Image (cartoon, rainbow, N blue to C red; front, side):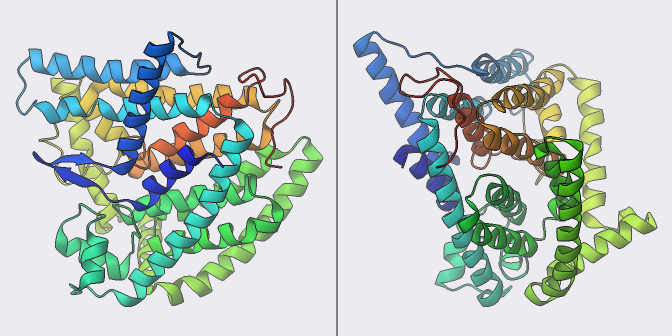
Length: 419
């Protein structure tokens, strides 16, 4: 086991955000990342040795530089509401860079095995916690259990109470964050987990996704499964065979969902049905999630008119939520910020394609994981989240660590597997 990675993942999945004076957030995974970086810097100064890091480290270094540049421009132009919190946002991309660097220099077999084991057990625990919330929590619950779960979310109390009983979020900030991790869990089971242990992580992840009612992934999951079948095929005949199996699985899964979902969560089933009806009828204004996201396009127009290159930086115009990582990033950091965000996906894809020669399973998983992250960014957002946003960079770090010659004790040119 890679205990550093195990502790980091467990902190991401299960620890709440603490609030320091000035409403400054602090998480256990932040302490692990920055504390480890401080120790590594002290060790490098003591030994006068700085280890090399391969992969897209230059891009990941430019991201915090771009955030700092946009914030400095906003400060120079004396835009309102620019304060210490806007500069503290610089810590999020630095944290992701630290996590990437540590994983890029790890032993790939050990880190990959640790990642899979922690994901397997965490998804079971998260599914159980979400089921407890769904069964035992009521909209007016105010007991010890309810107060404990509410420390994990920053949503307003009334809405948070409602989510606990109707749309659980387990130990995350929102139900959609649970849905994002659950979707990744499904593909961890398909792509990385040994067949003997595959069922429990796929089933627990699917149940967690269903009761989270994350419609982005409920609607896109069939397309993701079809894309993965095509991605892993080595010939046209194999692609046809995998597509046939995938379509049969989807047909059986759809029937199962139609039966199980109303039983597990009638509220989630109603939300999905309402969204489908609104989309088919064209009356999207009647669907709150659709109308809110369309209303947020006003932020894009405002940014384009007033601060198109470096954004407004401040959060003061956003309101409760931007509901889209793309809108949020463009509004705060302009063309510079949205360019840096979108560059992650081709950069990650290029390295994943290179890695298929020596770590095919992880490379294929990385491509699907980046696709999931991009889709989530359209309606919510992972990279703007200091907690769940670490998962893509953990994956990229493990991917780069698999490169031949990345470590002395690692075989050159040998394909990396779990066993």
